[in-house]
Length: 149
Image (tube, rainbow, N blue to C red; front, top):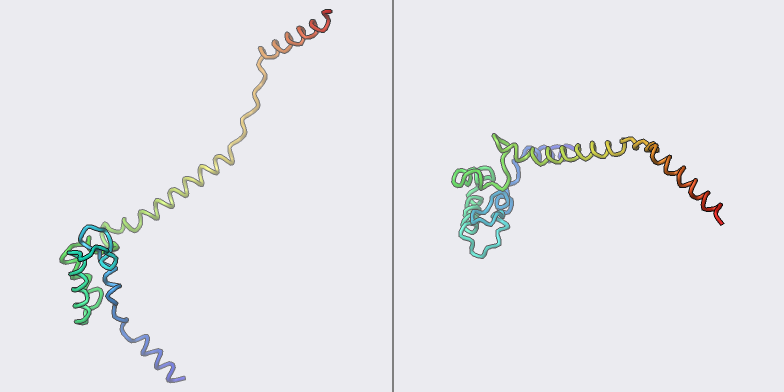
């Protein structure tokens, strides 16, 4: 039991597992203009992606962690190099806007459906006096036609 507790304590106290090259590459956007991550860039001999992959491998070999590598690339290329925006400053809108739009759309659809369901049926149209006169005239003419030989 003591060994289990000690092993569990060591596992929990150990630093996080070092990031893999793929994780770092997926956190960065290739700067060749393809709009893909460095890992997913499919240009053969990409002038941007290949050197970035090489630099990531070198930095990982030196023992740098993912945050340090991302910070170095952010310093060089700016915030645009990150594949997902940070949750700081004005970037929080990039995270909040899609959820707000979905919520607003769902609310709008719900309101419209409720109004359609709850809308009272239009009252039946009252017969107009002209229609009554026309019916009486029609009835008289039909009676006259029946009487004629």
